[in-house]
Length: 135
Image (cartoon, rainbow, N blue to C red; front, side, top):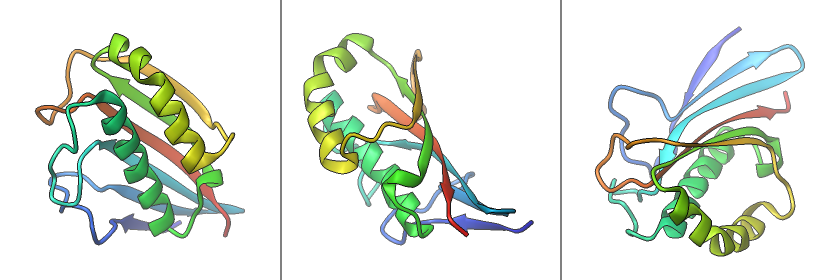
């Protein structure tokens, strides 16, 4: 069983973690995706708007899956951390529209947890996940 670090070339260089770890397993490959926030290739939070950050974090998750050779339908689990449930609820229409534009009507197993804060200043949401990719 081997491991491969996944790091999209347009991402900021991670410090103290890997963006993704791909592991070969019998019958497929498991991709563990580190928590992604709403930042761009220069490690700048894209907007103070919750929905914009959510969709950027989701795009970052999708970029890691694609870098590993997968597609959005290979995502099987997402764990979403939010700092403000009211902002999440208020942004739900925009998040839903953005979700459908990226994943259609596909929804993996998901959990959403409210947290007191995130590591990066200004980050309002963080999304981590697991994907099962074909061999």
